[in-house]
Image (cartoon, rainbow, N blue to C red):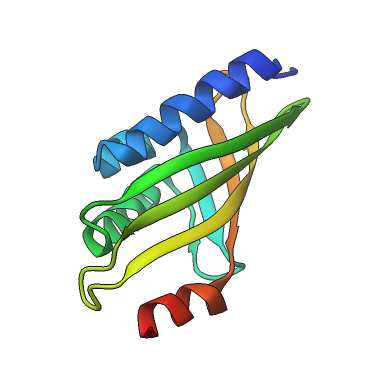
Length: 130
């Protein structure tokens, strides 16, 4: 099944709003029950429950987290969601602006089955240490 560009755009807008709501449960709801994410080829978060745990970590780390949807591109059942995260890091007190993307594989219901997330970890660390 093919996901239309319009459907992918609606999904990305709603996903962005879920992050901005600071509800890890809402973020995880975009994933299939057995859908997961791997960030920067690190620890897998293989289920919706694990995705919720990952999202809660970012929400806790950035209490004023704002996610901005930069772009979405779609082909078949795959989408690339480009984003910018802005927020104040809780421990360091530093303002962070970080760009990244997620490469999604979607199911017929438009849920994320697999996401490969990427951001510049070195830049992130530089901003935390500034």
